[in-house]
Structures are given as C-alpha cells and as structure tokens.
Length: 587
Ligand code: AMP
View 1 (cartoon, helix red, strand yellow):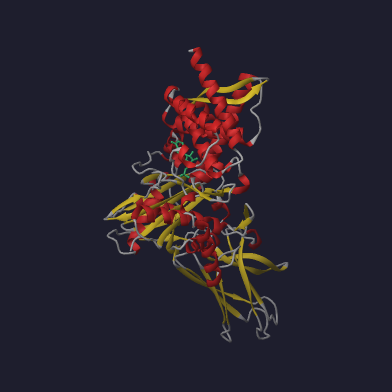
View 2: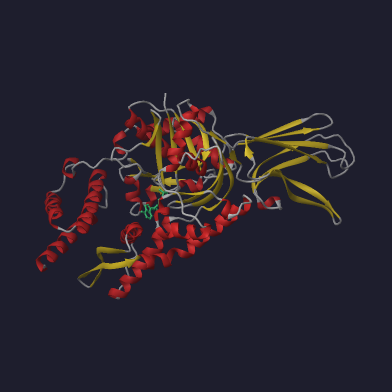
C-alpha cells in the first residue's frame, strides 16, 4: 500500500510519492507536474480541474473558481453554475483529481496521503483540509506544515542543529518560517507571512505597465473587456517568467484594440530593471516579515545556517538578490522551488507507512490559544482580557492547564470562550468556540477554582476540558474549526457520493491535447480556417507560433465544450491569419 504526499497550494498543487527509496512528483496525462488549483464547469456542465479550468477563468468566472485555499475553514460559499460549494468541497475536487493523477501514474488505488498547509493555518483551516481529503476518499495520515515539508525535501539531516529560513513566495501567498533541524527532528520556530502577496500581484503590476505602454504607443486604451484583459494578463505573466532568465523580454500581442478599421497591436520590450522597479516595494514587505520571524525565533541573521527558497516566484533573480543582501548569505538551491513541498510531504508519507525513509516531525502551533477572562482592577472587574494557555510556537502535541477563579460572589456560571491570536483583548482574536460551566455552588468571589486544560494534537485539533476543583464537575469542547461543522458520517458519505458523481466521466479532467479535428464535428468554414492555421504554424516565427498554438488550444476546448465563445475565438483566428499573411507579404 502506497501513501502520497500532497502540496495543496493556493495557485498550484502537486502530488508526490516515495518509490524504492526515491521520491518524485507524479505527472498528469499531459506530462505536467503542476495542477493549477482551479475548478470549474464548462458551459455544458462538465467538471474541469486544473489547466482547463484556469483557461476558462477569465471568460467564465461564474463557472470557475481559483485560490479557494484562502477561504478554507470558513463557510464562504462559491456558486458554480447552479450549485453552491463550501471551500472544503472545492478543495476535495482538487484532491480527488490529484488522487486520480497518482492512481493513473502508479496503476494502483491510493487511499492515504499526507497533506501540507501553511504554518500559520488555524485549526479550522487544518480541519477543513482534512475533511476535504476524506471527501476525496483519502485518509489524511497527517497534516504537516509547508516549511517543514520543504526542509524535509532538502534532507537537511545532520547531527548538528541547523537553523533554516524557509522563504516561500508562490502565486498568491507569501510565508517565511524559521525552522530548526536536529538529526531527524524538524521544528518550526516561528512563521510570518501575507496570504495576499505573490506572483499574481507581479503579473497585475506588469499588466498595468503594458497597458500604459500601449496607450503611449497608440493613444488608445486597451479595451476593458474580460477577454482582452485576460490576454494582457497572460502576456504579463509570460514577460515576468522570461525576465527571470533574460534581461529583456519582448511582448507581441496582436489585435488588442482597433482605431477605426485599423487593428492595433502591442509590440514592446520590457527591461528586467523596469520590472524590478515595479515589484521592489512588495519584496521589501517580505524582508520585513523575515525580520519579524527572526525576532520571534530570537535569532540574529548570522545564526541562520541556510536559506531555502520555495514557490515559483522565488525564481525571480531580484528575490534571491534581496534575500541575500538582507541575510548576508546565498540561498541553497537544488530542488525546484515549486515542487519541494510536495516532495517533503511524500517523504513524510513514506515514513508514516514504514517506507525506508527516516525523518520525524515536530511542529509548533501557529497562534497562541487561550480564553477570555475578567481581571480585577482598581476601577472594578474588567472583562474581555485574553489569557494565553498555550503560547504560539509551542511544540505539538502539547497539553497545558491553567487555573482560574470566580470573580463575583455567588457566581453560578462561568463562560469559557476560547480564542486564538496574539492580542491582549480577547475579542480582537479569532473566536474558536465557547461553552458554559453551570450550577456552581454559591461561594464568595475567588473561592471557586476551575482548571482549564488545553490539549492540542498533531493534526492541530484542540480539545478544551474544564474541571471545577470542588465538585469535580467537568465540561468539554472540541474545537475542530471556527466556521464549519465537522461532517457526520452520513454527511461525509453524501459528500463523497456527490463528488464521485462529478468525476464519473473521467475524460472531463485534464483533457489531453488530441488532434482538434478528431474532437467533434466542425463547421466547414472553421475547418478551413483550422487547416490554414496548421499551415501557418509552419511558416510564422516562434513567438507567433506559440500564440497561434495557444489560440488553437482555446478553440479546441471551445469545440469540445460546445462553448458560446467559439465564434469570438474563430474571429480572433481569422484576424490572426490575416495579420500573419499581410506581414508575410510585406517581408
Ligand atoms: P507556486 O504557487 O509555487 O506554484 O508559484 C506560482 C507562481 O510562480 C506564479 O505566479 C508563476 O507565474 C510564478 N513563476 C513560475 N515560474 C516562474 C519564473 N521562472 N519566474 C518568475 N515567476 C515564476
């Protein structure tokens, strides 16, 4: 029996496995190791997961969702077509697609997984992730922190203690963690981040920059419609990626707008230095987070032995340069930054099922946990103070108790309100739940004592137990999550059945790129255009060929889905071929 490791990311997800002592990320049918964390339905109601869903995002946002991870642990509803989904239900679809990817690649059923989450995830978010796994038919052996997984992938196991900064800049989120590794034990000392900062922001800044250049060039704005803006954004991302390996990048987007009957194209060059100017302020924020994490971990930059880069956006040279200047050392490289979390998760899965991989995890709780209390002051009793029972960054599993006394004479009831966070005012933190200890014997203030016990397990589930010292009366609260209920076995079964129904037609997932003309019957006019396009592919230059191929791919999807966008795409293709042929005749 094999168990996989899953990096369930905001932008992208991956699944990896240990086989014969070797760890590898498993590809989809298209050979891609990365599955965009995007889910949608085509206009004919077919489930799309990954790149196919992402492709329709701009044109059909009402049927497509991405970055659902931001909502995990809440009851935020996403409407896709005519149905509403909770965040863990969308995540379950992504996990189910990854499970299927692994099963296709390995030729056997996979039922167990280790899934990673950011170090700062609350227990609501961890529980929602676990539930998503269960719905997808995966027993979640363990939820582990992403920086811990990354450190595991680097196999930094020596007898000496190593202190490592894990800097993770992905598509939509940024985290930095300080991790201590001793032999086989990995411990997260501190972590900080911004879950609204990442490569998507860089794309948007470049998109605006390109729109500015276009306006200066032509005296006309790039049209504000979703399809054109989506093209511009895609071009911006490509420029960004090109600039990671080149000092300049060329953009050529044909037919972005028109002036009367004249089509207008965006043709320009962007220098890496221009791009760096745009993103520098955002990167400076990430350096501040590194400083905060080091302060929390009570370490000076000189005490850091190693820096690990995680996430696709760390391929940007300025990111590496700024970290190097800030911490005074060069980050370690070797493992692809967008795959190392999945690889580490797979190693941990291997350990848990007894494969020949040896590493033990020690994680810490990301936020302080405690209760609201009333404090006697010279002005009287002041309620609403946050009393921390388990401080943040305690190693898990952890159990702590604290004793509290009644504050009023003949107080019969004590309300236990549980919060997580760092603010001294309880209400400013995240409420996790509350319960009452009732029927206390009538006694003077301060004479009844209640012990509050917090038990935080390896999966980040908090159990709160109160014991009244005199009569031994007990109360319990299990905090699974703040926003959603843990599913009953019946609800779980129903959710699984619903999910399986979505997946019944396997072909709907990750459609491979077979020949367009094989797909469905096509109108003769379009068939003629497609023939011309195939010919043009052989004659246009490499960049245009890429653009044309992209357009053909979109048309293929539109044909397969019988999409209403087909006429517009057909028009774009006509324009493209017209433009290519006039260019050719001018040359
Ligand atoms: P991740 O969430 O780790 O998969 O990272 C995805 C982000 O990395 C996206 O914003 C990508 O555009 C970005 N990315 C991927 N490759 C590169 C690259 N070579 N240079 C700059 N950004 C990249």
